[in-house]
Length: 379
Image 1 (cartoon, helix red, strand yellow):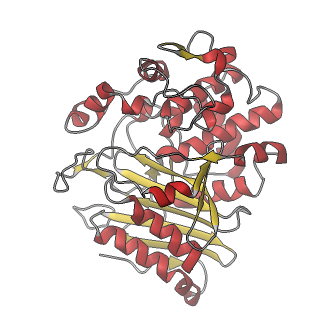
Image 2 (cartoon, one colour):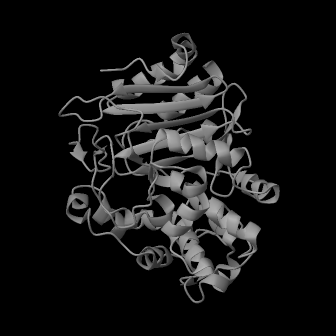
Image 3 (cartoon, rainbow, N blue to C red):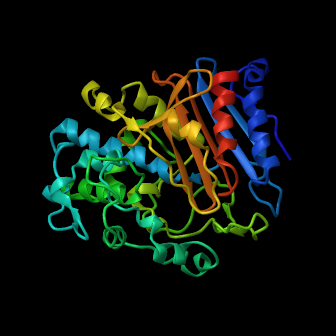
């Protein structure tokens, strides 16, 4: 079941997104229950959908669907810290030890040599708690169904990451680590005396009027209209059973991946960010100063895009750039959380923005990259 997409402008204009719609249909043809996208550009807004929001009822995906955005949360977290840097509340070059004394210690980890900047661009060398065998044993495979409501505190997640030796000395490599952003959330709270959720609301959600964006904390539900979220629990077997994982305690993702939003709100956020509406020029330059992505870790059963994609991607402060096959460079982020895969991308001027979501957490990453190629190269 695939929908033809819809538009907020004359129907003829939607033909410009025929390739994007075809890329969404390819995602559902490959087995994802449903896919949803919104494009914002000079011509207006276009919505595309394919497949279903609920495999039992056959209800289609809708533009109003809320979903767990996963690591797109990182761009929100980095933006809050950069706004605090602009206000003089902290500095990107402050050590983690300065704000979290004694927290990052042991097994060769030393917060005195790691800066806030190292956290935000993944050059700290701190091990990703999501790769810990004990964590995976609880939150992948069938054990996830038992532990889905357990949750975790930031301190517990950091402790898992620090139980491992650093992957490399600070500033001497690049490796994606959710532990970095759990620590970044803790820095926000220490520097402001306020909660992470409150700061995201004050610094981003309220100014941009993101009415469908929430920071759920420990709440297991997805509020408002939403698609069901489906998972194969990261089992390697392509015929693994599919489970409804719409509800789970997202505190295990924290400031690295807990936010819930919509394609419309995410387009508004990334567009405003890149147009300079959230950060002064100095902080915007800091955010976009990026380092090469040496390699990308994917959860079990989630094939990566391959060496070509890695070679054309860089990572700034909570945002990445990707150079597409047609030479266009887009800025944004990807996100994965049980039952939901998302990708946001925008041109540097923030005038052409795409957000895509699929309500299943398996399948080739190349399929969602193909949506970007279709929109920015063929649209």
